Length: 301
Length: 252
Image (spheres, rainbow over the protein chains, first blue to last red):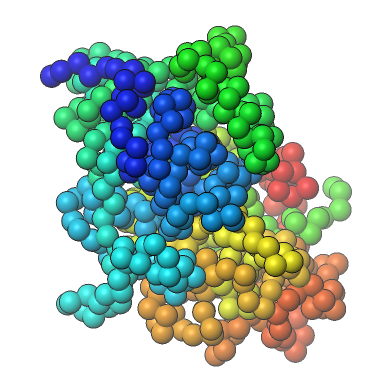
């Protein structure tokens, strides 16, 4: 099979403005930071972003004003507080916002991954989340329905089929066989629902290693278009078994993101004025600093 | 032993709601503390699940997040939303959904989306798995600090349904059994089976009925004589203080 290793900049160049991209991070874990930074450097505009629980990745894209429509189940930076840029955009109405739930986003990706045009769910019923979706831009994505066999009430939701999905994984081989350690939230469904799938791997392992334990392959190579090899590619978020989140840098980010006049400063200093992710890693402290974040092999953090 | 804190009575009351061998989907924070306390005492066979795809974790360090490597430790299964929330919650096998909240109202409706202050709206985290848990678990327990603004007559945003408008779950087409308890640092609240409205069950030591009523934003149904919430045992206090939350992240 083909060798698929490429760079973030080359991949991002192939993504048109206005694309629907699905991001694989959750709060402050396994965010696709290397790709998000490159989307910002290349000023990809008017993106539709979907995600189960948005974290730093999507908050940065919204802070850079590159998102036109947001489809998420929730958003948080865990102990570092709320996703300020996303919440502010909601408050000012500066983007089209669809507020779902973790499971409904997952089911919609699952429908996409299975090639179904819709999927029923028992969540959302009788909630204000549903009322707002029906009133807003998601009206055509939802319909109350009854089971044709039992008559039970469900909510039917359309499938989510992103143009491109990005998932950050611990390891992959050069062909794109991916291992994900730790919980995987909606990554599998999100990955397989998309028309194009790009993975970012901390480490490239030989295919022989994959063949020895194929049960650990969560995303198989034949679905993967490209593999971006980027150590510390999720910094400052955590990658289980590899490194912990960078608490000092996340605090610094929140100091900027909670004030609209300061988020631009963060983007300028850490993203636009660094050439690529390696240069960004140097800027945030380099090898010595990153060594200090490395996970204990027993604890995984 | 130092004086027992109201937060310790609260999580011990939460823990005692959980039975051995139950399957529990736990939210971040106080629900986790109560769940680990139950597991460390009377409910060793309890299976805690995290929405992100973690089963039966036994963390060493107090976790303060959900996608947070500290809480993945010593789990027996890693999966994802589809497994935990799809093939457990949606499948109908989860006994208890244990959640925190920004606001809970008299019908057990939960808000985790926004607050309204002086006409302006501030957004928070949204549902994540909260709506799914509240819609699908066999029963739902909410644990939170007792403040008037957190217990309003009607939530500012109905993120996760309880007995909406006093209706039954069947009338609402919801599968789960709905709200079971609201446990605060002042009292334990249940729901009247006829009106499905919040009803006081017990007061914690140090909390008076007047104090509870003054700090509750909805009319609370009252028993003839509210009982006293049992105090945590010495074993429960030792576990809380030495193992589960030694730094007082949640109980301080």
